[in-house]
Length: 290
Image 1 (cartoon, helix red, strand yellow):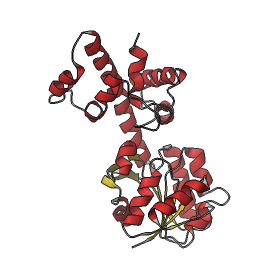
Image 2 (image 1 turned 180 degrees about the vertical axis):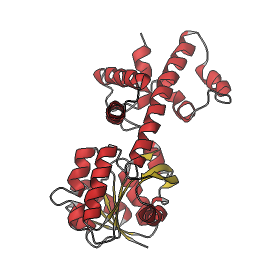
Image 3 (image 1 turned 90 degrees about the vertical axis):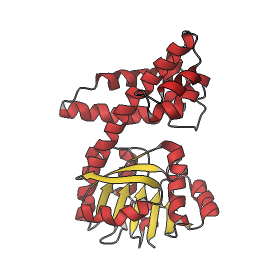
């Protein structure tokens, strides 16, 4: 069993850190809101620290799941960041959905400090985190990935090293690009069925057995039909816009054309303007209800 720090106890990190503790690892958590860290310790055991550096002291692994590039820099290379205290040969595993640029930047800083860095963004949403069934896409060197994988397995159903540093983040961008088009297609299809007088559930029961099948269809069609997009459920529109912004910025840098992704990103901006910042991404259908 390993000594582990987990930084960031949001809707994803909170249960992920819990799975590590339940697997028998010695886990110390850090969260900007101390009350959340205290609640986690009360539920799972372990310990909490008041800075990322203190959480990382003496740890074999430091896991993180925070908001964005700036948050990630803050908890790693910023004042009181984990890199200040990580011991030589220890491994930082970043589960944040961030840019490939920051992954490569922090990989280089980690190497200069004698530690390892693996970018390991996740897919599966809140339900995947709570059920220990996440998909993890990794970038970095083989040896630290091999060392970290048994820990990652505690909260994932699939984990793979895609390539060099930054490759995990690039793979996550591919994932989000695919989802954007699928969710818009599902929204249009369900609204079309509704306005044509069809039973949407009956329609999905049939077409989900054929070529139209997708995870989004099987897991979100009822939310689309029922308008069930309540706060703190699923994957928030704000998060998706952050992720699509990363995709579009990188696409511009490498000359990739993402016309559908750019369009769906603006559709999500419309949903935000409707007050749906914390609605699930399947709320795209609300734009169509006129």
